[in-house]
Image 1 (tube, rainbow, N blue to C red):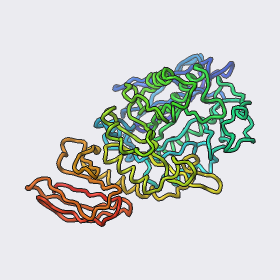
Image 2 (image 1 turned 90 degrees about the vertical axis):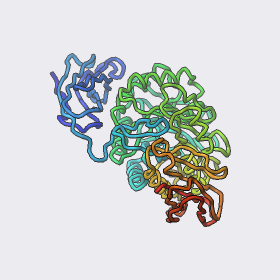
Image 3 (image 1 turned 120 degrees about the vertical axis):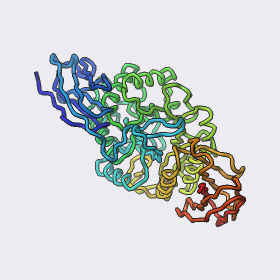
Image 4 (image 1 turned 60 degrees about the horizontal axis):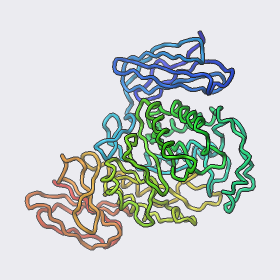
Length: 506
C-alpha cells in the first residue's frame, strides 16, 4: 500500500485533508474517481475527492464535532483502500464555524454568534499578480469587510483586459493583443481558444484555495462566484458535461472550507447559453455534493431569480431600478422571507458608467437604508487609477470614503440587542428599525433620517419608561449622548444629512 498523508489532529470546522498517490494514466479527471467516508459517534459523511496533479489525489472534510474520527478513502484511482483516525480539537477563539441563516432574515455562525455581513466586491483579485493579492489581503485586514465576492473563473470586461495568472483548464487562450474598450466584445477577436475541458489545471484552483484559507484566517467569508458571462475564453459556453465536471471539481476542492458561500452566478441572466433548467441543475449538484450545506444564492442583472426556490438560502440582488435600491429591501423580505443581501447597489467611484460613479455618501446612505429596512448591502469601489487597478475588479488599496463609515455601521450593528433588525413604521419621513427578536420589542429603536435635514424630532412611546437617546452622525462617525427622556420628548438635531437617532429603553 502506498503512503497516505494526513494530520493526526485538526481543529473543529477546519479542513482535514487526506492525500494519496494514484493512477496517472488515461485522464485522472474523468476516468478515475476517489471518495472518502468520515465518521464519529455524531456524524458520518461521504465526500468526493479530486485529482490535484502530479499523481496525487486528495479528499477533504470539515468536521462538525470534537472528538475521535475515523476515515476510509477508496475509489478506482488506486487498487488500495486507505483508512486511519484523527482527533478533532475544540474551535479556537476566532473560529465560530460556517455561517447559517438565523432568525429567518439574518445570519449566525454555527456556534450561535451573530454574523452581520458587511461585504465588498472584488471580482478577480485572486487572478492578479501575487504582490497585488497580498496588498488586497492587507487592506481587508484593516477593514470591516467580513465577506468578499469574487470569481473562480477569470473575467473579461472594461478595466480588466489583462490575462489571469493561471487558467482553469489545460490549453491556450485566444490572442487578446488587439482588444480595446471599443471592440472588447467583437466575436472575431474572441476566437482562437484551445482548451481541453476534460482536463482541469490544479494550479489555478490551488491558488484560489490558498486565498480562501487566507480569508478564513482573517474571519472573512468567501462568496464564490462559480460562473459569470464576462468571458473571452469560452468558459461560459461549455457543454453540460463540462459544466458538471467543473461544478463537481469545485465543490470537492472548496466545500471543506468553513467560510465558503456558493454564488451560482454573477448576472446569471446575461449567460444566454444557459437556461433556468441549467441553473436548477447546478443547484441540485451543489445540494447533492456539498455535505455542509453552505449558503447558496444566485445574482441577477435585470431579471431577479425566484428566491422562493427551496435551494436558495438567501437573496443576492443587484438593483433593478435606476433610483430605488435599498428602498426595496422590505419588499424583498416580504416576498421571499429569507435574508436579503443587496450585493450590487452601485459602486463608490468616478468611472464613466452609472453603476460605478456614486459618491461615498450615497453608498453609505444605501447601506443604512438597507440595514434599517431589515437587510444588508455590499460595497464596491471603482475609482479611476493610472494603472487601471480598480478595487472592484483587481483589489489592491481602497481610496474611497465609505469603508471607514461602514466600519462605524458595523459597530452600531454589533450593539443591537437580540439578532438582527427589522423595519418599523415610526414616522413617514424616516426609516426606523427595531430588533427582529420579539423578546426585545419596545426596547430599541434606530431612526435613520437619510437625506432629510431636520433640526429636531419629536418622540413619544409611553408615559412610564425612561429612554436613553443618542444622536448618531453616520458620516462624521460620532455618537452624541442626548440624555434620558420620558413621555413626550424632543431630540435636537444639527440640521444636516445622514443623521440617526438611537433610542433605548433604560
